[in-house]
Length: 342
Image 1 (cartoon, helix red, strand yellow):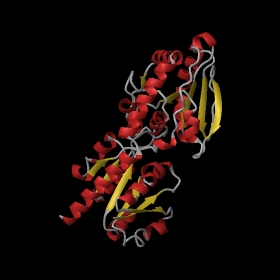
Image 2 (cartoon, rainbow, N blue to C red):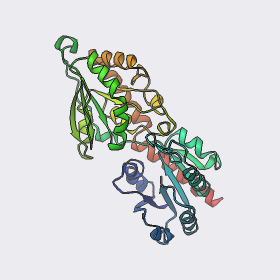
Image 3 (spheres, rainbow, N blue to C red):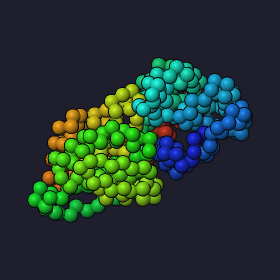
């Protein structure tokens, strides 16, 4: 199939991980994928789809188009696919207006009903989409990572941090928008720092914060250096608010930590409960006491960190790697072609 994707930007994280990453395997399977930046102006959107009629299918990524623009696009393309990895029918966790947004909800419903195929990043998102269309049109394709970009450093025996007074390097990766969640989590990180003096946290981001009792290492985010910076740490941190918006998140940072062979400590919200198997690939923690206990256990046991990290990397390779995601896309496109023939 000849595919075109309408995306916010080619370097947007959703485009990179949910579409661009699969280009090569899609090509190997006989498909092609062209990326087009979705126009932002109202006038430009009135012409949306005019240059896409020769594609077999068009993928609209995340954007909730107004009804007029959607109807024009729907009439001008052969098959329409919607790909989304957030609870886009809601406002986010930090909106002062609350989660519910009737306009977003209406647009989401209209888009789901208009599409021939809907690709959701997790089961929570898929369940919402099933409210508005038949289940056979819904496919769950998780956000996937290129595991080959994440090298696992060799295990170097070293004395227990309890004896040396040192502490393993924690890491958190994200953007300015998601850093707001880490700011909410800062009191727990401070408690970890008080319980384990010398606690260090590498922030891989485009903005930084200070956390009492924790030494913050500022690492400016770069696509080129991100995998190596993550792999150079010892423990990955995954935390998000327990709310409807967060339950729709696809857990990219946790997958990145695991691809790099890091154990993960995360709260059991949304996909975290699926990615982090307590005691196997990391630790699930809710209360401050549970977070402190998990961090101290991992700080004191290098071999435990390595065992959990290896288990997490195997999980990513078998369930959340690029070949796995590409296979799911190829299967979904095959079913779309079959339905067209029928």
